[in-house]
Image 1 (spheres, rainbow, N blue to C red):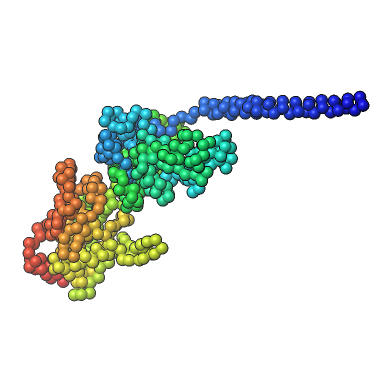
Image 2: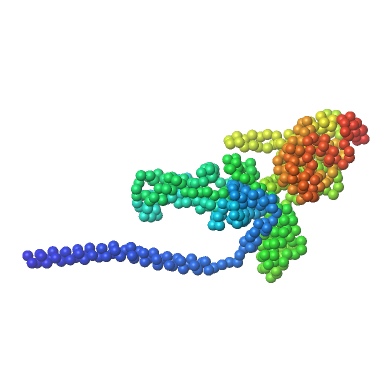
Length: 559
């Protein structure tokens, strides 16, 4: 009996020891885990600090980044509009159009700093500038991850933490909330996913963002009060949107455009690109050989390209033990980078028959002088032909799932020209072989080239030179009326840069500011007769009979 009691006591002691060890390990486990976590965290922090102590030299692109609005070259008008939209007591949402590398992002960031200094501005001293890139902005359709709008960490997902274990969904604010009270800048906003675009428009209307979760229960008392508040009242998102894009305004959703002030940044001129190149060389500690900045400006389309070219040419010079960038260095960069020369057509030195300076827009804020040349040869009555080169004869239009081919707008414009010349000036192109050419490879907007084509054909048929200091843009109706066109400001600036002294534009496009432009005369017209009088070097006969007589004489001389 004593033996059995001893065995039972021994068993109880063993079980007590096992239970004690279990309880001891259970109590020690979290502490041990914490120690292990702290030890591992210490190792990682040491690695992180070691990495942070490694610094490369500052890239030239960062050194040349504008630190004030005065350092942004060539965008005075765009910055003025941006300040008007953001620096007042009622700042607006803004869309900035313009080619890459002209300072859109830098201008938006610096304008916010200027707005903070305005006592009437609602932007406070701590207003944030939150920058996103629409080309890399991705989201999960289930709402698990959305860096723009915010997301909800539902309790079923690993890593939900103590609240997740308790079955509580956890809202995570996105960029629209982080930008609350400041500016949300979205670069390349035209690339934003349509779903995100629609969500963003809703936030702009409500000035708050609502998050949803199937795991949220408004009657659950275990859910903390702040999470109830977020789901019921939304997260604050009262900011001003500044979207930048290299697309044209027609490619941006109308719903977004209607909520924003539109600001246009223009293409930099060659002189402005040269200035940026000189500043980059100076900040990089390089000596630029005379003519180097001008050579760079012939190939760099924007400031960013100019800085990159200086940096690469400077790197070549340093590797060869030189501090000066030579023209040979720049030429090597141009050839190695396969840079193409900028469209840089200048006015001719003297008037020519059949040659007219047209004007074209080939991108947001991008304009250029466009040569139009025409030859005309008298042939037997009614056997003439009109040939057009330098453009496509057909264009394809895609509309959802439909693809339609139609005659190009230029072909339609030339047919209008034929009608105008016959009805207004009694010139029948059926009696001539006419060749209309658009050299230079610049895309031609048919309607806006109407009056230029008319003038060139008129000049070629009557063998009368066109004023080489005049450029023109405008659509022509079959009755000879000059109709309004788009991109007039861009075209006028392009004409001025090309050395044009007078620009002829439709009367309906004329603005009072054009009357005060320096270095160029802007002439509004309503009728093709006004265009001919202003552009053709000789006096134009006033009445139809004199035109017919002159044309008959010209044919007699040719025959």
